[in-house]
Length: 428
Image (cartoon, rainbow, N blue to C red):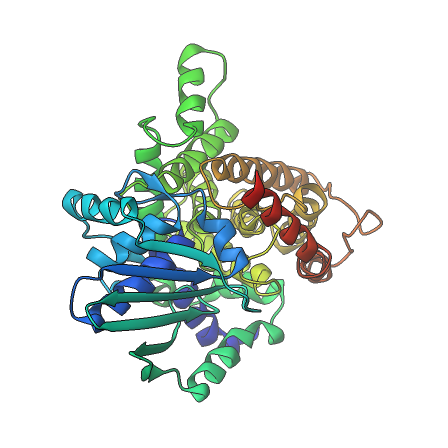
């Protein structure tokens, strides 16, 4: 076992699995606006935001918590007027109805603008707030909360230390030394006190799921499953429960529920996809506390490992790769060992690779549901000794090679897919 990697694994999960209130792309814009307003020292009268194409794609049609609206303009406005600049991805946790009314008034008067920045960064947000004779510009880049510069009236107040940025890059490269089996061994053998923090993922995402099952949010996918179980059109059981509870959490999250999700790799939906299927299986097999925590750690760390080979945002739906983390935890809970987990991940790569990300929106809950369905299907196949073989498509015999093949597709040919998706979205 590569125990020298374990501290790095714990640090990575603590950095990548954090609470997030609302979709993380508009929230990133809201955070930049909140930080800018704090430096402005007065209420802004004008807000200008420029974001990377990928951030624009993921922010155009998604609900902003507490506002009843979708899109980046309302996120920028309410973030500037009432955001908590110290709350990270929970920047909007304290907004009130009066704050929302004031933000909507700014939108109505046309003083909030959002455009696409000509930058190479996958994740980038530049927000300028103006009030009186002053203006402040905040830039977030490469991570949803990584502030790289703050300027007031053209003078720098803060510039990120390049040494700090380089150190972050070194930390993120820990997976260059790791394999999927190293993650499996860590999850099973790490001291419980080192991984107990992952229990918060269970708590937060389960609460979000319960909120989604009220039927008040989005496409009501989880609630629709429940209603049809009640009508007798669907039977209950493990598969239905996984789909119902996982999609319900995404329903609520994507339609602006004022409850945080525990995110993974900068995405609430990825956090939901890595959490809820594992939770449902753990409850189904009556797993004890320690077993449940180890399964959740396996899922979340495996999801981060798979995502580490890919751009933060891409044309490949992140819920699919996060569910490949979930299949690890689910397969183990159902009695599988690493060979079964390896086979299950390979089968998922052969099944759902290529599901596109066409922006964050309520219908993402359908993709979360489809990914969860693919995960339990692959887990059950693997336990029966069945998998998509290395002779088929992009799947290799080895799980790590299969992950790299899928990621090469996401980072290569699918970059043009991303361009085409955004072009369609902005012109329809």
